[in-house]
Image (cartoon, rainbow, N blue to C red; front, side, top):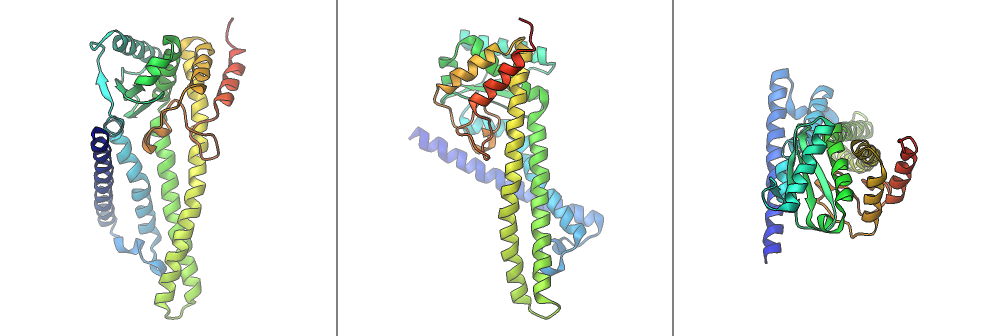
Length: 308
């Protein structure tokens, strides 16, 4: 029963957040159009697209959702996994966790993030709109199943995400690609429907062609954009692994942590947090993380440059 209630709350939060984002973006779009003196409706009609209004529409709706989600990321993350913020007074394990994060934050030259724990299988993540106002969360199972040195390496990995500003760069990449998908889908659809009508009054057929081509382009370009986002995410994971090695002074602890993760049941995170977790659930072109084996191999190559 408690699980069903929690799941329902998360669904309601998801729907409410997306509804609020759509309202904000629509208002922002009309305000910008009014300030620029352009017709907002010109971004929606197949053969009569205005390039300026389409560009404004694409940027606001492509970037807007990503930016609003980023600004709300800590609140959404804590609610979606049921994470509880700790300050170290809860017990010895919590005190060690907070002290370790504080030490790593100092080494990474960032402000102390919020620290949280949530019930779940082995995973950890970092999120937040700003590198000096982040959240680092770990699952109960990863705390139980890892040694402290391995867990310290995992925390170093997450603090490297924070120090590198990965949450912001990922949002910008996603937002720019979203804007491109919206812009070119509508542009190609307008050209196709205009070519079909060929100057004749075939409004119904033209609009039908416009929406058919638009949805096909939206799916095709959306898949291509996703591949770029996933590629960027995998590259970022290698960098965070190396960042953990630098913070700890050696890749050995991160290698041990990854080997441990390879033998544990990974915790599945919500889609909005999956790219920021310490591990993914599978390896493919559509995965947010490289394979454990590839990450260990990269760290072993890095280890050759560290002092013995």
